[in-house]
Image 1 (cartoon, rainbow over the protein chains, first blue to last red):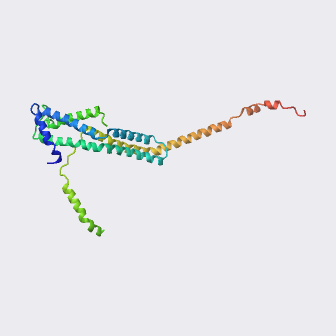
Image 2 (cartoon, chains in turn purple, brown):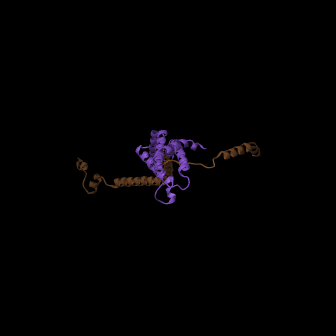
Length: 156
Length: 113
């Protein structure tokens, strides 16, 4: 049992509760919504949004300054350094929150694959056999929800 | 060299073996689309920074050549305008050449007075 299997009992109990009145496909849609909301919520919570916004603008300004620079070559050194420092700072601000937001989703994916990915179960009424797996329900919903939240909450 | 191998060989190989044994057989990774977009935007910023730096290095000699050419053209046009200004006759010279006495000379007293 790995670290990603730790939340499995929680997922299983919630899924059993939903299974009382919902079909597997509908449950996968709900899991997709939960996955999208949780991953974006965690990213929004753990990422320094204001700092990321400032780093983004600083990187853009540094690039513009270098692009429009018309002085001596020796004077361009600080501008080159500034734009790389700004770019790396932006990455350094984004990566930790991305990794943190990734883990619950990874745990959910491991559990979903173990629960819904057994055998040749199909969760869509139409389409070829390979396109009826749980992934074809879960991922589009999760992506749509994540992108809507990304846009709606103006996440940097 | 031989002495260093004897000294560090065993600890080094032990560390490598332990690291290899503790590595997972299967690795799982997935980044959601939202956080993934932010990460991609940050990585894209680095790619663009590299691109701008490369463009700067490529464009530098061209920009410098253009600047030098523009400066040369400006200097040449300034020199030609100065030459034209020097070559153009003044109003005093124009009247003298036409055989008319300048105003000051006409007022000068006749010789012997």
